[in-house]
Amino acid sequence: MTNAAQPKIGNNVILNHTRLGQYVHLADDAILEEVDFGDYSYTAGHNQIYYATIGKFVSIATYVRINPGNHPTYQRIAQHHFTYRGSEYDLGEDDLAFFDWRREQHVTIGHDVWIGHNAVIMPGVTIGNGAAIGSAAVVTKDVAPYTIVAGVAAKPIGQRFSDALIERIERSQWWHWDHRTLQERMGAFRDIESFAERYLP
Image (tube, rainbow, N blue to C red; front, side, top):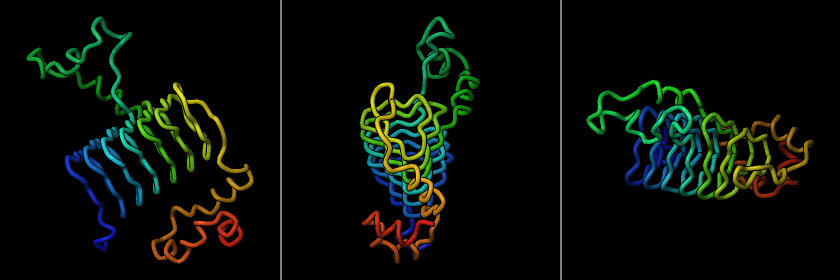
């Protein structure tokens, strides 16, 4: 791996049981816990990502949270986390089963997804390739490929391309092209018609 391909990691970034791909950039003040973070993807800062698979070429804006913790609103008398983080309050052992539930609600983000500033992706959600998540959206349900969602709770507000073009992009799987191919085809990435004509089957 060349120096340029090595992940760039900012200040105050905590990585626990996390795999980073090539050409990854993690900006300052981030926590990634049990995350598989794909090639060319980046965070813009102040991010928390737990128990997730992040595809390639994913753009994650500032303050995005993926798979945040939930409090036991209906399951326990007290919602406070002393009931599952007992050791922090000298109240006994932690409730590991509580954390296992969150781990099991894995989040999957496809390739070439854009997640806007301050968005929250809730546990268990899958976001398809090419989707766009609006700023401050709270995503509680799966998002179809190339769909634009916004709001609280997030709802579809549009689709990036026609169904026919989406099908061709999905067949191309350009996100798996090697670095040299990306370099050679950069010009086409800047013009939809040129890219479609030359590289979409």
